[in-house]
Image 1 (cartoon, helix red, strand yellow):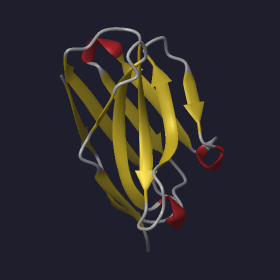
Image 2: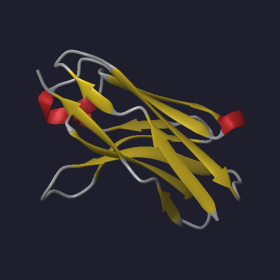
Image 3: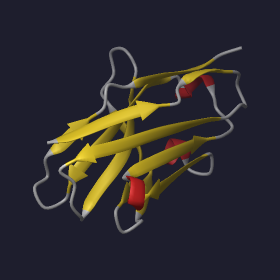
Amino acid sequence: QVQVVESGGGLVEPGGSLRLSCTASGSIFRPYVMGWYRQTPGKQRELVASITSGFTTNYADSVKGRFTISSDNSKNTVYLQMNSLKPEDTAVYYCNFRHISSGYSHWGQGTQVTVSS
């Protein structure tokens, strides 16, 4: 079993920055991928960014150039640095951990990010 815990959400003004953190613990083995997804009411959860245990990254077009995902494999932790935030970035952000071999996903509880003046 894998546990996933996020932190770092909050309220920020447009143009501001936030950093989200996500740590996975439990039965972890490589290769794996960890990613950040977000969801707003009435919409499907969408991928924001992901990073593999081999440090391959992937970004949604809407956040390229503004968000950066990074990881510390020794801590099974990923970070999402969000800069130049826009009101449309407002959402609940969820962290996901997935073992690539099994495909089984584990989700965190979510953290609210609100971009508003």
